Length: 345
Image (cartoon, rainbow, N blue to C red; front, side, top):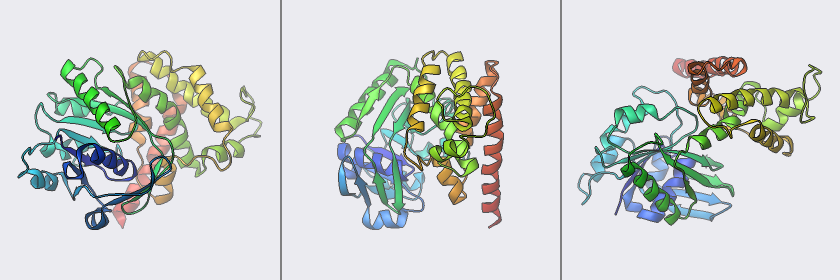
């Protein structure tokens, strides 16, 4: 039976640990935990899902580190992990996540699965583990850890999966196909793509615009729209919602221009306006993006993965993104302020 290591047992990681435990058995799944380790080691995890049901309890193996997880599995009939699934936030750390997972990656055998937001996050894994399949994914999965080891999940769940790069060897393509089947066997939904980067860019339209703006203003998306609806700054107001939504539109169009420069022509103005209409019709107060939650909690934010990488990729193609660049500088400064305050405590 295949084995999986889950690195990052927060809200999203817990839910996919449950899916993998359904498919592989609890004893073949190990979750690397941080703040929720004590609760998870005593009582396992509990999920309350609007899709799968309430009070879903499961108890996989848990470990405080990758090294500990590898030691636990050393005496198993199959000592190596077939999958290392990374569901931790895409934050710069020292040592890096690519280094931390090293003891669990068997050369040519372990598939590395990235369930993380952002763009341009895969290269360091491919460089460090050239013989291993790297599966890039895009998750639509609203979930919140309401207390240690307890997660509340809404009704939506979808995982888009593909190799990185899209031109990866056929053996890596096969690893992606098998992983998609595994997710389905565990009770969730996954879709296989020959090139999943289109899905990353499509999600980035929303994430790279709304996440930092909401964090910087401490407003949810619909609150931001209403707060800036009648500033009379002039210019086009295509959606009739005022300056705030028009500002977000201009940021999204910059992101779309970068996506198109990398060959994803259908990440375009039509898709931008579709996403804007969704935000405009939401009931107040609207959606609270992950960076806004991090800002309220004073935590470091995924600024580089979600905003900075897109700005740097734009520079490589000679695409001007002045609004995205400005947002990146401001959001990076905010995130750095949280890191410095934490270091002082």
